[in-house]
Length: 84
Image (cartoon, rainbow, N blue to C red; front, top):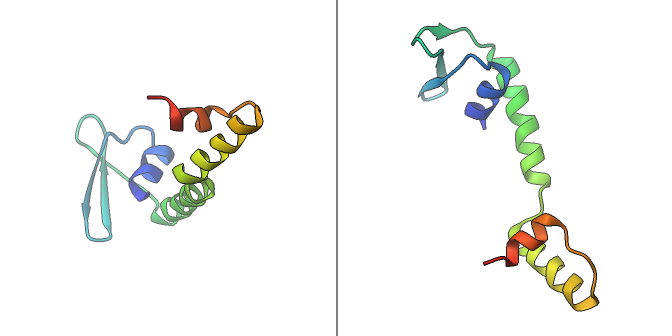
């Protein structure tokens, strides 16, 4: 999530080198981009919370099956679990 947080916070970043917990971000020209790791950690936590709040594929499949049996409309995510 920290890589995604860096890309979200710093649009000029095109690549990231990680060595343990040290992150070095680079722009398109290979120049180092200064990043604030406190901001990165906060953004990574936000992104993880959003990911954790998403229903699992199994939950979506169960919901889709129940709605199909009841004749109810499916959400796009539910429909995506059954499309071949």
